[in-house]
Length: 189
Image 1 (cartoon, rainbow, N blue to C red):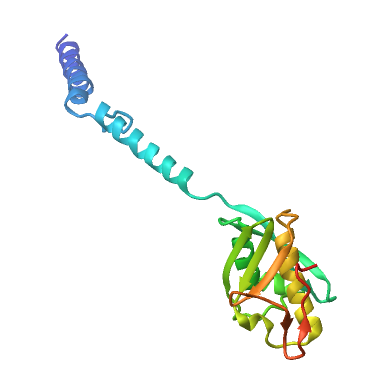
Image 2 (image 1 turned 180 degrees about the horizontal axis):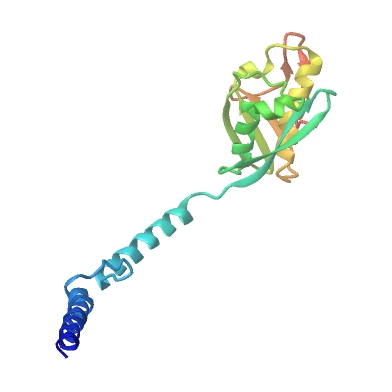
């Protein structure tokens, strides 16, 4: 009987130790619960998310526009660009940047010299006026100048304005262009 009582006491001590460890130990040690947040933390998180969403909504959305370039076959070729400034002025700016490396690799080029700048675009009295820097007319022959004008006209037309387009250089309406003195009919056709 002595062995039985000793075994019983050892079992009771082991069980008591296990229960003390299992129940009392859990109360003194608690793992961090990352899902528990206070009301103020939830409010801060909500405010941060709202701020981010407002900032995203205020950023201009990307829009598509068509720009007219030339292709290796000496024909016009429209490319589509994703831009934030999908305005007529933005389209002319994109045209003056010239084709991207990818577009050039696909045989697209621009007859417009790379140093030409847009001074302004006006939509007034039922007509569109595109004012560029004077260097628009320099370099190239008759065909090159005709293609430059075609690129401007078709890029403006891609906005479905259906208004006559006039070309100005350095603030003055163009009559003749280039070293050959090419007559430019206004509005551009």
